[in-house]
Image 1 (cartoon, rainbow, N blue to C red):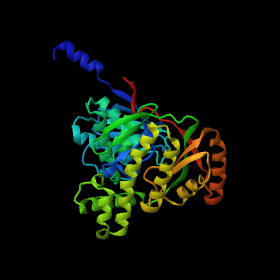
Image 2: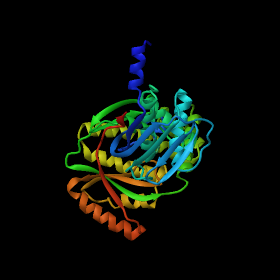
Image 3: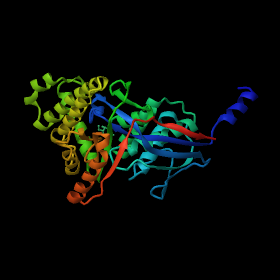
Image 4: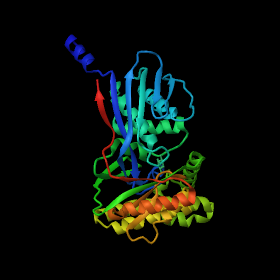
Length: 377
Ligand code: GLA
């Protein structure tokens, strides 16, 4: 580089970055991502904002403004700890493993995705940070690559062998669109999401049952076991016919879980067709079937989620409802007529309080754009 070029290089290199990444909802396709299947999510409004700046020392400092807590860590040889720091440290260390180009930094973050709500505050956290670090240190990684790095932080530091849906959606969501993601090759198609007189309403159970991480990993292992037994690398390649043919060789738990995944994959594609036809009645029916399977077959629901979904039964204003995300707590997703939202929230809030003594939270959500850089200096 000549002198002029060096000067430009230093002038354009940022020292401080502000980045934002959103949480996500998933219309349908639950527990299919780690089976190389299909999902139909979208990014939402709520998310997490990171301020990151280089600090010129050998050590990184991170502050979670919501909790008023700070922690420090180096860029290598750190072991997992507990709580939010694993998402932050894990993302930084996985980026460092991949690029070797990070230097010490100081960061702080805050956001408004309800934690443990199944709206993926954790992906918002990791993706916001990864996008910010990518820009600050000019790492040159693509968004799909960043999503994979954040997923590795989940696997190696948080201890959940999550799929790619949450991170991918947070980074690749588009305003007004739902995204059909093929988790096998990460190809995407986007569809305008027009619900007319209907709306998507989330009801937050405000519970997040313990052992959810190990139950999640157990489900993933069961799916891998079945695929391997049938000679495939994932359930994506197993048909319902071949599963049924081999039923007697599988434990009834493994068979039931694998059948759910295969059927759920089919439901994602059928939902896309129904959306294209503007057939919301069918979309609602698929949501209901999805919940039934998640609750009874895949067994990732809980009393609180089942109760809230149960409240929708027989109400013609609600076309469908299901638990959303990993399960064992978090939110239900309801496809509901706009003019019924208020009265349903009132009814659900009081019934839920009577039954569980918990104050429900409700949010209407719409498809929004994925992660972005907000400031750079
Ligand atoms: C969590 C995981 C995702 C996905 C969902 C269930 O949100 O992070 O990868 O597996 O559960 O669909």
